[in-house]
Amino acid sequence: MDNNDSNFIEWELINKSLRDGFINLSDNEQKTISSWLSHSSKHRKFYRRAKEEIFNADSLRYSDELKIENIKKNLFLHLNKSDIPEVFRQTRQKNRIRVLLCSAAAMVLMTLVAIPLLIRDHPNNKKLVSEIPPGTKKATLITNSGDKIDLSNSNGIIDIGYADIQVNNNQIKYSSKKNTSKEKELQPALNTIVVPRGGEYSVTLPDGTKVWLNSESFLIFPDKFVGNKREVTVTGELFFDVAKDTLSPFIVKTDDFNVIVTGTTFNINSYKASSYSNISVESGKVIISISEGSIFNIGSGQRLNIERENKSIDVQNIEPGVASAWKNGWFIFDKEPLVNIMEKISRWYNVNIEINNSELSKLRFSGKIERYKNADKVLNMLKDTEYLNYTFEEKGIKIF
Image 1 (cartoon, rainbow, N blue to C red):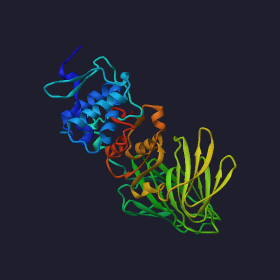
Image 2 (image 1 turned 90 degrees about the vertical axis):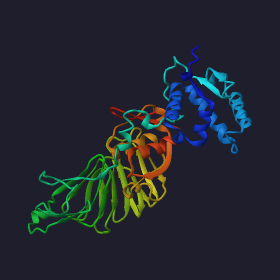
Image 3 (image 1 turned 90 degrees about the horizontal axis):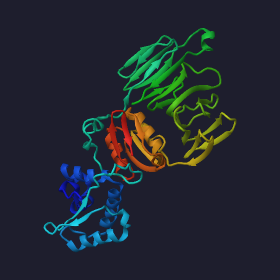
């Protein structure tokens, strides 16, 4: 058996990392304990149990050898023999326990216990993950004639012939021009606002309705609303504050449902690649017509959710402001599956994210963090739950 010191970890280092926090260790200490934890699932289980024992000893002091010894004994008492790392050795000179690294063991990916590896331990992570910026205000307007106008750095009034677009502080207000031709009045020109991954934008429609578009979303709308209805088509995530008009209902069309309102605020989440689609009402009431023919009425504080795979539909009560938090600069996760969370993070930071375990994808998390932080801040919030970890690779971020 190799007794080289590089194959051992000192008990006091485990103790220190749990009492003071992993981030407060020196770079060498972080590297040592990260390497040991990465090497074996047995080490990670031992570390988790050590954490439970240490946090149960509220009055523990490093100089209190008796309490430290009691924690060690409890670890041996409560763990199965097979779960104890192979070699524990107490040296007489330093009075420490050392644990032999299993030199032949392969790294086991963890599902429910997070390895406290810092992103900077990976040579690419040190530079890249902390520098992945949040999304910005950017969008493209595609006119009825097919012209593409970059709205990201525009200001002032843009004349597109049949309408004027006022751009101010990365928001646009769309105003159609009056036309004396009755034929043209009955054939509105269609426009499309496209927001790419890593972007967001907002627009005021000809009737005064305000729409916020999240990353990877688009909105198709006419230059003017004619007749007895106002109709738009969307994909992605959008928040609507609909101008009230009881004589002309506002209709939002998605792949999964149509929404009919006369004046209310609501959030639609309907990405083509997602496993679900939903609408959350913040104020007022809406009528929802499902493509299969069902009709639902939901009001303020309710969400209708469609699971596309099994075609199930359910209505839930939600906390006010959760669905629309993104437009106010926040990520809010309310018992949300990790796979859904990572879809949102991937779009906003324009980075590929892979979850390496199907069971991990189903875990639900709650939390709140600013959207305008760099990617590592959001990922570290999730990592701090100790149910997952992440690493940066050539193709993107891997969650494990």
